[in-house]
Image 1 (tube, rainbow, N blue to C red):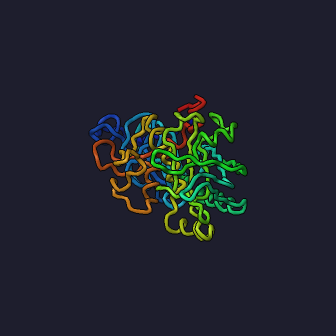
Image 2: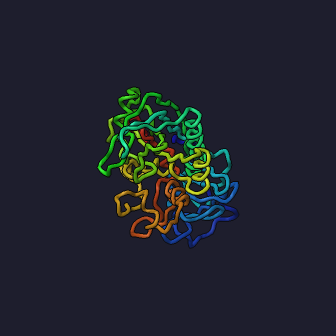
Image 3: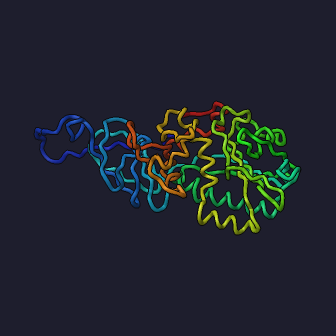
Length: 347
């Protein structure tokens, strides 16, 4: 995000000059300067992209010089930020005018009308009608608003292109003997998916229909190192068990386990992408995946607070190192996957 303006905090000196016992550079022996931060509502205070552990209104200790100070508002889920040059004790007042322009992330959502494979009962197909794919797409859009964008404190905005595939899509079986819609299959069917076109591709298909079952030991799958893929984009496939009523199943997940879309997307950026930028994220779980480490950091099912804190860099570190871990609003305002793929980053 580009600099919007610079605010200089000045200390007003009233009356005649007199000798002070305050050390030069601030009002604490360690040379740090006290800055009072206020905002339109209570919010989490960030300093240079890291959560301080302090909420607004509150005071933070800052070294003299240029900094980015931000506040993530607790109720409205908005992020406010200022670039400031701290010279002396003062007050920093945030208003809604300090809201940055959201970073645009681009997604391709693919609904699969027919999925084919060799099941336990032989060759067969599962199907979603266009009306049913509409429901799946609405479920995805709901998650974008309620999780992707909200948990980012509105620092990102998703632009989505939808392209359904009407031709049969052949399933592959991986090392775990799982049925999947492989990225290579989608790339062959949609050669227009080129590096720099999207930040993530989301594929939605039906797990079972009648006697035809492609059940596997997962709900969603994500490829965890997008810049190593030929498409150079994040890739997520959601294998949906529609049961006897797709509407009922979607409502069940919304009410009981709503995180499938954001969980899988976080795999695409939370396993390698942001670590390669130098961010401090949580440690890997026993299966080698960071996003699966929720219990290591004392979060509980259905993990929604984990996704929130993971995205907002407020996961309390239970090991050595920085006090808080995660991505954070400032990083989300920075370079996206597609920009990194095209080498157009300004981070």
